[in-house]
Amino acid sequence: MMAGRAHGHRNRLRRLIPRVLLIVFAVYAVSFAIYLLRQPHRPSPPDPTLRTDVRDGFRAPPSSQKPWPRLPSFLPWVGGPSPPPPPHTCEAYFGNGFSRRVEVLPARGGGGGWFRCHHSETLGSSICEGARVRLDPALIAMSRGGEPLEQVMGRAEEEELPKYEPGALLVEGPSAGRTAPLVDTGFLNNYVPTGGIGMHTMRALLESARVVPPGELHCSQWVEEPTLLVTRFEYANLFHTITDWYSAYVSSRVTNLPNRPNVVFVDGHCKAQLEQTWEALFSSVTYAKNFSGPVCFRHAILSPLGYETAMFKGLSESFSCEGASAQSLQGKPDYDKTARLSEFGEMIVASFGLPQDDIMSYKKSNGLNVLFVRREDYLAHPRHSGKVESRLSNEREVYDAIDKWAKGLKCKVNVVNGLFAHMNMKEQLRAILEASVVIGAHGAGLTHLVSATPDTKVLEIISSMYRRPHFALISQWKALEYHAINLPGSYARITDVISELSNILTGLGC
Image (cartoon, rainbow, N blue to C red; front, side):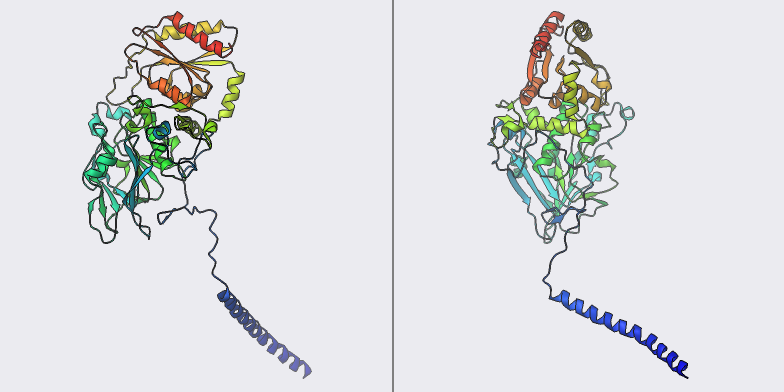
C-alpha cells in the first residue's frame, strides 16, 4: 500500500517538473524581451570581411580586386593637404591636374545613376565616371578583338577601332526623366575637345550616350566592381602602350579607387605581347565584344586616350619639369618637379612581383650591367611585315665591340644583350632594373626607362632620321643622367660609342 502511494507520487512529480521548467523558461523569455525593448538602438558592428565603402549612395560589395601595392614614390592624388597644382605646371601635367569637377548628372539619394567628369585645363582632357552605366556591344561597330595575331593578318585598322551608334552608352537618370542625350556639343567642345586627334573615340562614346529613366537599362549582366573603359590605338608599340597604361593609372587615382580596377578594351585589336602587362597592372582584362549582351557597371570610368597624357604631349608642348624624389616633395611640393613617373614605374615593377631591394643588392655585388637594348625583327600587328626598321645600321658591330672591350676592363662589367622582342615583360623589367647603364638606338624599347632605378645612366645613339626627344624627356622627368650621341646618318663609329661609354663608367667608379 505504501509502495503504491510512493509510486503515484513519483508519477505526479514527473508530470509536474516539465511544466515548472516551461513556466520558468517563459518568464525568462518575457523578461529578456522587456530588457531588449528598454535598450537604446545600436547598429550592429560591420562584418570585418565586408568592404563598407559608400560612394554616392552605393555600398560596394566585398572586393575581389587586387589591392594597390606599396610604392616608395607614392604621393597623395586626392584629399591631400596641398591644393591642386596650378595649370601648366609639371605636377599639373603628370599628377592630378584634373581639378575641375563637372557634374553632368548629379547623384541622388537611393543609389541611382550619376555621371561626372574631372577636367584638366593643362592637358585639355577629362576623366569621366558614372554609376549605373550600360555599354551595348551590339551598338559598337568593330571587330571582336582578342584573337590570335596569326588569325587576323591583313585586317585593316579601321575594322579594329570603335564606331558608336546612338545609345551605345546609357546612364540611368531621374525617375521623371526621359531618354535624352547625356551631353551636348558645347560640353564636348569644352571638356572633351578633339585636340588635333583625328578619331577621338572617348568623345564619340560620349556623343552616343543617352540618359534613361530607372528600369530602362535592361542589362544581360552586372559588373559590380569599378571598371575602366579603355580604347587603344598603337597597342603593339611599347611607348604608346605605356601612355595608355599611364592614363589608366592616373584615371584610377584621380577617381580615388580603393583597389585596382577591371579593364574593358573598347576596341577590336588582336592579342599582343603587351597584354600581359595590362593583366598584371589591373584586376582583370576583357574585350567589350566578349560580352554576350548589354553589360551594366555599378561604376565605370572612361580613361582618356594615351595621346592626351603628359608623356605624349611633352613631345610637342614645352613645359618646365624635372624629376625629383617623393621624399624631397613630401610636405613641401614644388610644382616644377614630379615623382609621378617614378611612382608609375614602381607600379609596373610591383605588378610583376619584382623585389627592388633584392635587385639593388644584386647591383651592388655583381659588377656593372651595361644593357644594350636591341632592335630585332618580330611580327607586331596584322598590318606589320615582321621587319623592324633599323635605327642603327651597324648595331651588331657596335654591340660586339662593346662586349669585347668590356671583357678587358679591370672592373667587372657585364654587357647584356637586350633582345626585348623575345623576352617576356618580367625578364625585360629585371634587365632594366639590374642595369647600371642603358644604351641603345632610338626605339620604343627605351621607354622601359620609366621603371629604371634612380642611379641608372642612359646613353642614346640617335640617327639623323630620328632626332626625337622621347627618351631625353623620360630621363629628365625621372631625374636620370642622360647622354646622347647624334649621328650624321645611321652608322656609329665604334670609337665614339666606347669613348662615351667609358666616360660614363668612369663616373661609376670603373
